[in-house]
Image (cartoon, rainbow, N blue to C red):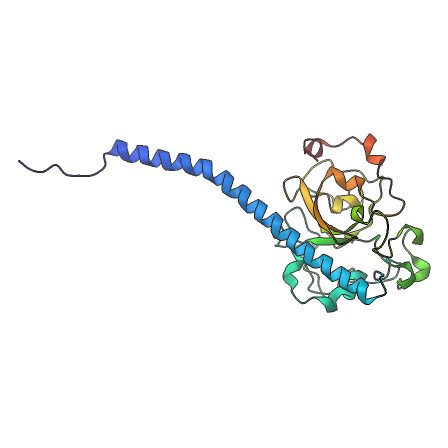
Length: 261
């Protein structure tokens, strides 16, 4: 009597494949969430490094920030002011927004970095620069502006030093689609989440990016780092005249209204 051959039947194989597919369907969303959480943690680590850089700069400059934004200048002052304090360009990039735009537009997006800037692009002054974090351009010292008579806005609106009241609520450096911006409390959110209009609604939208599951990450003027809900951006004290209660009467677009924060 011959021995029975061992092996799987077709039905058994199909059952095993179905079980594997089911497990993959359960595990893949969990793995995706873990990856996103890891990127958010790495992003905060980058910003903690940046907070240390900004603190070192103010320590070296009598407790003051670099020059305030003014007309006639080429390039963001903070880039040149801080360059001597860091060499690792990797900290320019949020891990969730490392690649520049495929359409060759220099502005970034939710998951795209801004840049790379060319030799002839005078808006930056530093060709080859790319990144996915931006400054709050209301942080700066009017007394050190390149053009003191051409201060953007009003000199009294700026945060010249880190040792001020509400420093924990004054954004300094954040996830962004551009190198910086000058938000006003009257800025309105973009109607869609895809960020089709770079200048749409005002400068708060340069930071209002659904990059970390309803949040962005930010370092504040007191050099602490935390995540910030997208609607919460309108409650931060961007400049000295920013009305943090103005948004209480704002109508949020659908994509933003459904977010928890």
